[in-house]
Image (cartoon, rainbow, N blue to C red; front, top):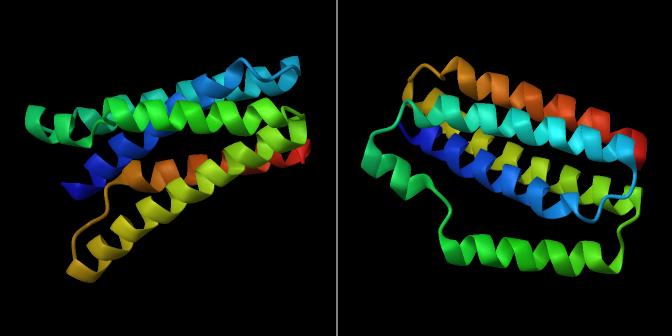
Length: 138
């Protein structure tokens, strides 16, 4: 199901982005929050990947070039400004991109009359919760 592929793709990129940012975070409290959010993304990844076949899972995973570009983007962006405000803003931007792509899949399922898996709703709730927690650092 496309929604599970999107959740896998989305949470893999989210966890990798957080991992790439951790070295730039100087505030222990923000770093702990980011680590907890990364763990949450990994749990969603695992749950969604169990719903996919081997080929679907392989198709959904980020490719080496995508991972390299993501890491370079984070390095350039956080390297110039690693303030808590900027790091939180980067994370929020990432969550907003995730919300947009998952919501598109949810809307398509709704239009097609297909039941949306609870995991998709739970992920959207988690993204909202994570954004609210990051607002403290803006």
